[in-house]
Each structure stands twice: as structure tokens, then as C-alpha cells.
Amino acid sequence: MPDIPYCGSPPLPGSVTWNLDPLLLALLALVGFAGSWRLRPEASRRQACFVVGWGILFLALVSPLCNLSVALFGARVAQHVLLALVVAPLLAYGLRIRVRGLLLPSVAFGLAIWGWHLPAFYVATFAGDGIAYWAMHGTTIGAALWLWGGLLSRSVDRPDLTALAALVTAVHMGVLGALLTLAPRPLYAPHAHGVTEPWGYTALEDQQLGGLLMWVPGGLLFAAVVVAGLALALRRAEAGAARPQVLRRT
Image (cartoon, rainbow, N blue to C red; front, top):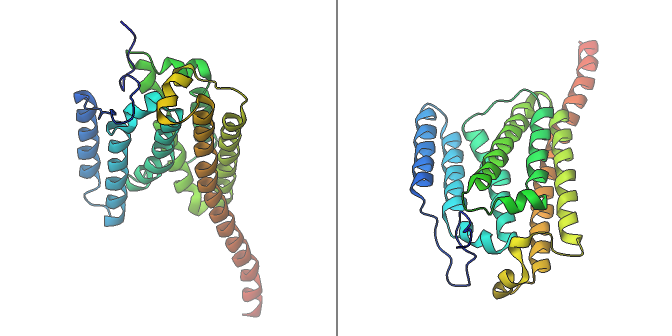
């Protein structure tokens, strides 16, 4: 009997299924309840961010995207992008996750993203026991929450460091996305041509789509953080330069 991945066998068009794992549903319900309880005294904006982030987390793991990611590399990358670049900042802001440093979170996120896209580790996530699959999601989401907690925490007092960390993240995600997009051959055995062909993609086209999804949205989001950080740092520098002149006049 073949080893069936956690999210099921590679689906054909029209046959994708929802992931109704009772343990996963219970864990997501627990996270939702705990987060809502913690945010009772918080402002409605933080509560809304948590609810939206939790909802996207639920859909990313439970919806047919989970099953589709067994067949298409592009769907797996879309799942990663949602979790790391949408869910993580929403939850980090909503839960007011505070992180003082940026070096370690940046390194951890880079290791998670690059490590799980090495072919050997990526293929391991398709094992039927699901251990590597959940290790991948756990480390990636955890590192993303750590990173976004740092970016949001330091954006006020050290916007220059925030911009630098976002720039480094944008560069290394862009390099990985470019390598996947421009690779001359498919790198991931689970997404062989026979698996992707029913969806209208060759294995290489599927990989190129995944690379572009990592390259462009990730680059644009972190580029926006870089611009915001630099703009805030520049305004503070200008205000600091103008303050002595005001004092001299008075």
C-alpha cells in the first residue's frame, strides 16, 4: 500500500477534499478560543486582526488547498505565503506579540523557508505519518510569528533596524523564488509531470508558478515594510535636526 501524505492522495480536478482531521479542528478551535479570551480587554482593531488571521489560518489548513498542495507545488507555496505573510502578521499584531531583537527571528525565518524547500526535506513532508509535514508548518509559522513580532515591535523605536531586517528577508525570499522559477528542471519528485498534468501544468511550469508566488508577493510585502521603516527613520532624523534650530531661536 502506498504511503499516503497527510493531506491525502494527489487529487484530480473536481475531486479535491477538505481536511477534517479532528485533532487539527480541535487544535484550531483551542487557538481561537484562547486568543479570543486573551483579547477581551484589547481594542477592537486587534481583535479584528486576530479573527481574520485565525480565519485564514483555518482555511489554509482545512480547505481543499491542503489536498491540492499534494498535487501542485504552486498550491503548497500559496499555502506557505498565506501562513507566513498574511496569517503571521495579523496574529502577531492582534495578540500583541513583542520581540526585542530582530537578528535571531530573521535567521530563524530564513532557515525555515530555505530548509523546507531543500528537495530532501520537502519530499519528507509527504510521508504518511505527517511528522515532517507538521514540523514544516510548525517551524515556519513559529518563525514567521517571531519575525513579525519583532518587525512590529521595533517599527516605532528602531524603524531603521526594521527596514534592514525586512530588506534582508525580501532579498533571500526573492533569491529562493528566483532559483525555483529559473531552475532548468523540476526539483521535487512528488510533483512529477503525471501528477501536475491533469491540472494543465507541466512539472516545471508548476514549479515556476510556485517560485513566482514566493518571489513577487513576498518581495512586495517586505519592500513595503522597508519603505515604511525608512520613511519613519527619515522623518525622525529631520525632526531631530530641526529641534536644535528651534531651541536656538527661543
